[in-house]
Image (spheres, rainbow, N blue to C red):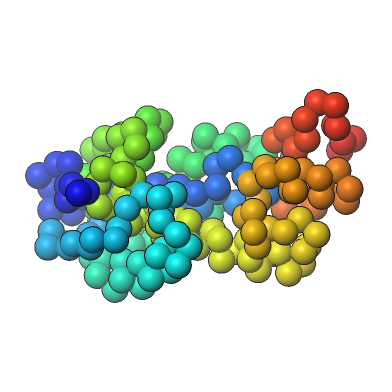
Length: 199
């Protein structure tokens, strides 16, 4: 059973990201403030849910949330500032985009930079402990997956529709065969050492 809140603040906001370990595409973060009465038996860490369940949850979260926002940080910026900083930036951008200012932030993971004057708490595996972080993980994942499905149409040979840009064997084989695209993160090790590309 996921916990409703970490603090006593009414406007507590859960934050999570998707796509950190991917070789292509953005890192995507979501911020979600849920009402105190919110409950859902299916909601869990997005990695524990099937795509079908995530797609069912997305409109429920969007309808019931006090406020939510989803933001991308693109591959060019990831290459410039590194993936950790890009993940935190995406979360800051998501909080920026909220219609309601949160009183407290709870963040999945153990790394975050303070956002303005709002107190925060990092929580390892927070997406499997707190409802608002789980809700943020579902939105981050579904929005990012939708984007990867769109760019799949442009470069179907990488099968992003299936692997969403993660470093699967198939994705690496496609990079080896076709090279990189403008969506690939050039700062990432796209191929194992023995298969390095000249970028």
